[in-house]
Image 1 (cartoon, rainbow, N blue to C red):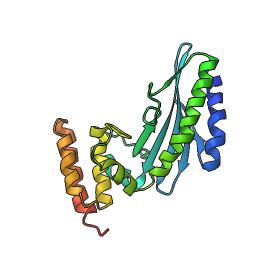
Image 2: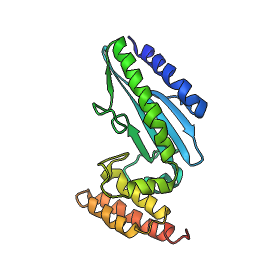
Image 3: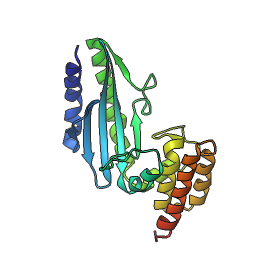
Image 4: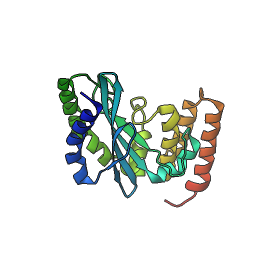
Length: 216
């Protein structure tokens, strides 16, 4: 079994599902990437392949970018910003969406591959596409991130990302509990590096001066 054979099998599974709903295959060094441009940003589906001699691992991801959020918070995090910013807002993997064993599936035989394809297809059809449907607006991100008792690190890292994405979403959505979440995230960062704390304070000032002053 070769990487090429696995790639062709993955393509045979995903193409008939995602191409009719607007996804287009992109070049990717890590495996297979399908992207759908949206009115708010884009949806990405990477199919990832790791190879170790005769052993492979497979996975699938679901990535969402909402431009209105990213164009603000990306400057206050640990993101590497290229000329064309393609950072994502939130993401889910197979473990997030219910595959409890791991974030990737081990494949060593053709039977393993068949079993992996079945699992990946079920996650794509049953959970992945609905993930894209659920999160299409700033409000949907605000509602998801700015709620108490969330599972840790769901859809983004709680310290590195949720603190800045959640606060930005609260501001853009004119969440009446903005001040509560400002203090909530500041407390979450109490053990973070000073540079991260400084960037968070810069973000809060920007949101108060440039976003919250605008009418809803």
